[in-house]
Amino acid sequence: MKSKYYYLLIFLIFMLCVGSSHAAIPEKFQELINKGEFSKVQELMRKEIAVNLNLSSLDRLEIIFEIERLERIKKDFTRSSAEVIDYIKKYIPDVTDKDLEKWEKEKSLEYMIIDGQKKYFNPAAYNLFLINKEAEKIKQEKEKPKEPELYNRVEGAREIIELAKEEGCKYVKPTQVRIKYSLSVNKDAVPEGKIIRCWLPFPREKLNRQTDIKPISAFPERYILSDNRDYLQRTIYFEAPAVKGQKTTFKVIFEYTGYAFYNKINPEEVKPVQLNEELKPFIQERPPHIVFTKELKELSKKIVDQETNPYKIAQKIFKWIHDNIPWASARDYSTIRNIGKYCYQNMHGDCGIQTILFMTLCRINVIPTKWQSGWTTTPGRAGMHDWGEIYFEPYGWLPVDATYGLLDSKDDDLKWFYLGNMENYRLIVNDDYTQPLYPAKIYPRSDTVDFQRGEVEWEGGNLFFDQWDYNYEVEFIK
Image (cartoon, rainbow, N blue to C red; front, side, top):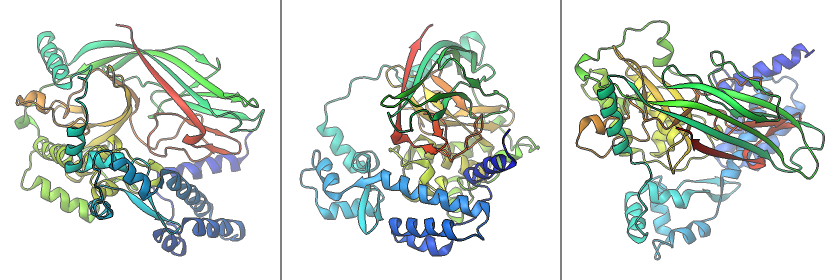
């Protein structure tokens, strides 16, 4: 039987990861962190938890995780200016240090000062050609024309709209999918014989959108499947002993049926939401990542202006994200203290970062929003993805994808498709972020926000992303 201290530890770590009530890092440490003196402050924090017997349990856990957070940042920021320049020279041969300084000021090149050295985000050079419009144009002119995508979003949306009208149904194009997912822990990452605990993503039952879910096979054969109602980040859980000199692999194959959704919205029918206990949480702040900061409230006023119709407000926010927040590879979410604030200050982000900012701006305007994420199964381009849901009265909860944004069409039904509608190429794993896993995870997660790749730990601690790899395969059955 587990002791009461075990369950207390689980509770404290969950509270820490949720971020709703944990204490701030002491100022003496924060000053050094702000100066980029990571190794020095890590050493001081280790001494603090070793000798300060007056630390509360939450304060102790906060400091322990801050040590880990700084270590994760170090892994995300390893590129030198020489490496960044070498990459940029492929497209801009005469690039200079002044160019780098300009891009850094514009937040097109992400860097940090770590232990006295300027270190660039690992994909910083690659991201430059996604974030900076001039650089993007130069790269496009020098690269060979891309092969056409296997799936065209505009044509896909057009087909969904036509089917929905023909069939008189909101849910169309049922697509039966088989997913093969595996996660392999590096050999000797865990001592021989020690038990490795592993959580893999598993699809949620979503009325009319994702149905007929069934596991086909699993390895190891024994597993625990979390309850669909109680766990909004759904998992299939395994345990296996580490074997010396060998990778430890966990596998699952499952099938499900996904549906496209289309419901034509008449903006004039959309009314301010009548708040009830069920909807209230979805218009509120949710620290640390959804916070109505002064700068975001000012941004909201600038975007929304005098508009009062909730749908038209959402359109303005949706378009602003599309026009101003380009997609770019993102640093590890667990290293970002406030994702919404980070997104606005840096003016770029990946799908999850864009989604959090969209949600925050909508909530400032009393438009309920919530998180949804998992994977796409898009032909030729399947991968991890985050999106959300938005509530319009009288239409209810509708899917929304701020990353896919506005489609290139003069037809408004197509152009605004992803504000309230969705294609059939989704694997929904999460209906919220930063939720407890089942069975409970003891150590802080690798991704403290999302759940897509999986999570792994053993009695000695969490296994971070660099200690394992994963594989995701999509097969269309019908």
